[in-house]
Image 1 (cartoon, helix red, strand yellow):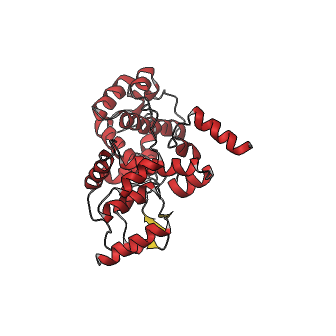
Image 2 (cartoon, rainbow, N blue to C red; image 1 turned 180 degrees about the vertical axis):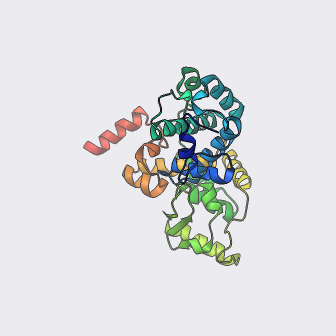
Image 3 (cartoon, rainbow, N blue to C red; image 1 turned 90 degrees about the vertical axis):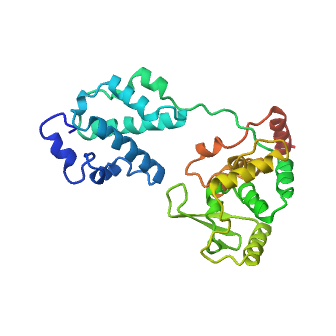
Length: 297
């Protein structure tokens, strides 16, 4: 079991402890993630620390070397995407930092070596191409099925994630307000605002198909919706993804003069502005000059 001194085992495994062998008691690692309620983050910690406990659960925690930690992370992540490799390492590093801080221990965090930082570095984010309004309009209006058009509009006009669109029920729609249940942010619910035209088309779509109040408006899989978006993009020679539509909603609003706070908190529903800024497209020199002229002339 993890220990560095005779009484540390009792402190780790007593009520409110942070680590234990069984999966049932391993849930106490929630104390590490108590500052965030994001479900995916919590699940990430549970997975990494569950595997870590199986591998090193009967070792002195201060005897685990950086070489063993590197091998463990390499085995755990394998051929995963760089973003996944980084997050797995970040979870383990946070656990060690938590133990070091809580129990005032003096050994070095084995995740802080140069080789681990290089191999499990954050994924590089390239410059995202933002699709212009005219092209998006052509894609939406070119959709022959009302279902396809609604799915595209809810993403491109309201900034909804594809998963949120697919979970939508008539009970969630109240005029121009749409309630998102169990959103990605970890909140209990969030509110999305749609245009009156989209709201009217949604109501007619639901009425014509006699969809029950608790039934999904669009009962299709994520892969099916993703293929729908890709086919719509190919009609205009684009490799379109659902997230491109959400990014367009944010960028178009920003370029139209909507305050960044509104784009962030209302359209994208981000917790902080720095996350929103990564969504917005790169501003060209001509566009920058045009905005300056518009502001000061």
